[in-house]
Image 1 (cartoon, one colour):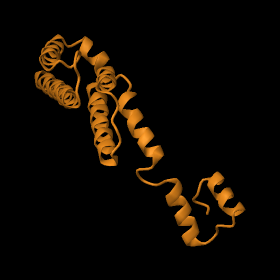
Image 2 (cartoon, helix red, strand yellow):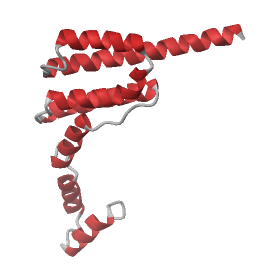
Image 3 (cartoon, one colour):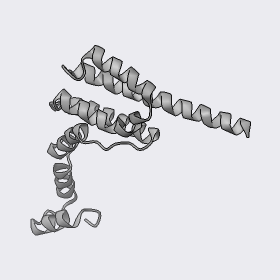
Image 4 (cartoon, one colour):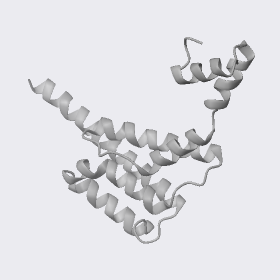
Length: 154
């Protein structure tokens, strides 16, 4: 009982649910995997993102977005509209793409060819995600290489 949140413990004491099986049942009922709370958080994470300040943050955010997308599919939830998901992916990369004209060009060419901005679909959203992740990993690799060259020259 001490490990439970105070509100849940108080509710169980008031209802005289003090047996081990009763406690476990109540905890599983409240915090069930795949429940309404998890679905809501998962779907919200697909549309509400924060701009990344570094490529490492962007990589982490993009990978978390992919995990949430996969989890939403596992739960059988209806994923949000592709337009909203494209906006969330764009928001993650908004700061980083400003200083990288080559990546901007490659992404613009992809977006135009796949019609991401005019007719987004679930497939093109996944492709955009893969493209953004590839750009982030490319930028991280070039930063590492640049750092190693700097160390050698010093």
